[in-house]
Image (cartoon, rainbow, N blue to C red; front, top):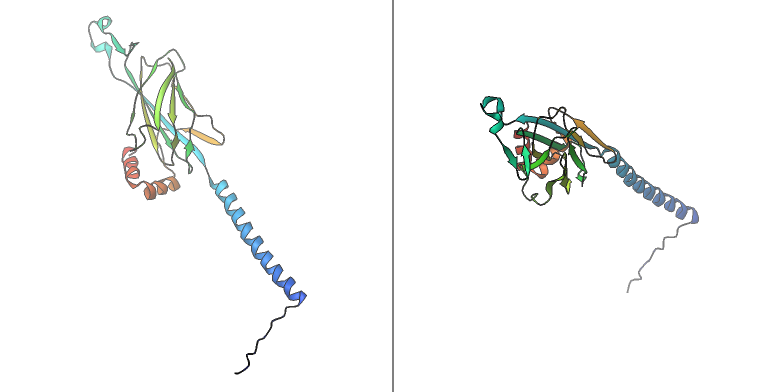
Length: 208
């Protein structure tokens, strides 16, 4: 039988040190990349809410002859004037907001009565809701708002207030902006187009 020749590769101490240095360099590079990517994602994350308020009187008593004979009520509340308060809230940032503490409050003794949330996305009926905290304050309770999603909360008021109701959402690192025209950031818009194309189309149509 022919003899099998086996060649043994022997590495010197300097070779082992060099290989170890290369491996260590690669490991440090990989770890640094992951750390840099995590920091970049954190730096790029933006928490932002835009909101829009609109008040519309629904009944003009001056058109009636006997205005003192007109009595309006909603549940147990007597309403002097019927005013619709429309509040649109959009997550205009690029990260989801979980359990945001949203509140709308009148600045004077004006009732704010929860009416309904318009155009609730499919599956969100049990995740978006609102309730009355007291006569002049309502809380909007949502489990989360994804980037680009819009909450269209509708309220009744018993009169036209002397000033605009106050919107608050105290969260760390959250930017809150009062706007007349709600805008969706390009990144949030792209996120919606990819993940929720139907919702994206509906939002764009509603904000035209």
